[in-house]
Each structure stands twice: as structure tokens, then as C-alpha cells.
Image (cartoon, one colour):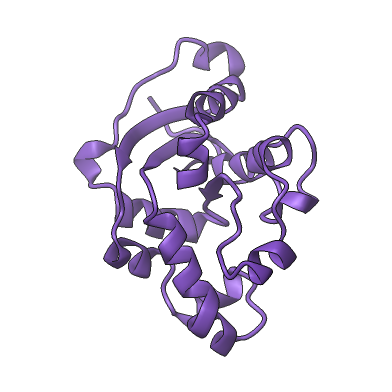
Amino acid sequence: MPKRFKEEKTLILVKPDGVKRGLVGEIVKRIEQRGLKIIALKMFWANEKDFTKHYSDAEDNLRNMGQKTLATYQKLVHGWIVEFMTSGPIIKMVIQGLHAVEMVRKLVGNTMPSQAEMGTIRGDFSVDSSVLANAQKRAIRNIVHASGNLAEAEHEISLWFTPDEIHVYTRAEEDIMF
């Protein structure tokens, strides 16, 4: 089958708050209803080393995460994120489809749940804010992580999956939808 125009792969992590609240099925449902294909899925319990790689202290990563200053992130936020992301099991998924990165970002909504539109995963299932998280000295509970762009997706997929864990198949409706 020829590669389709703008067919991409992206990463989604259902964070411990999403897993513990039983939202995995709802998240999978929304992804599949959108016509996106899950080509890898696994539950795991991450350790600090895993998330030190994922949320690296590289300046580009910090800039992409929108942190106000490198020093603040390194002293506080990085530790809070790692502590949160290792507090329970996580579901990791590779999603494939037309404009997958952009479509998944639309599905999950704004990183700040208090600003996420209703109808998005974060808008429907979280009301957390940076003000509350900072006051409680913790990471923002926003249900999912989704790669921010294609380069980030490729990097994150390579961190969390080996090539033999990613599957190629055709969904029944692909010929109709695309």
C-alpha cells in the first residue's frame, strides 16, 4: 500500500490520573472514532530514569514545554512531573493516521485543563490549573500527554517503543474514509 499523504505517527501517554480514573477506554474510543489507528499500546509503570529521558533538560524541550525559565523548571517543575508520572501505571500508545499529530492535539485539548475546550479529553475530564498545581507543589493533572509536533513524536516514539512493538495493518474503513 502506498504511503498516504500526511500520514503520521504520534505518541499518547495516558497519565496516572487518567488510568486511575478509568478513562483509558474513553480515550481509545475518541481516538478510534476520529479515524486514527492505534498501532502500538502497552501498560507500564515508569521509573524516574524513563521520564528523565522523556522530559529532558535540553533547552529545546524546555522551550517547547513553555516553561517560563530554565531555572524554575529544573528546580521545581521537572521533579514534580517525574514524581507524578511515576506515581502509577501509564498507558503508552502510538497513533497513526492523516495529520495524526494535529488531530491528537485537537482531541486532547489545551495543556492547561482549565483552558481546554469542552469536548476535548482535558476539557471534559480535568479542571486543574497551573495556579492550583504550583500552590500544591505538584504537576498539572491533565490526563494525557500528546506529542507536540512531528519531530517530538518521532523522538518520543523511539523512547517508548521498539520497532517490533509497532504494528502495520489496515482498518476496515480506511478505503472509505481516505
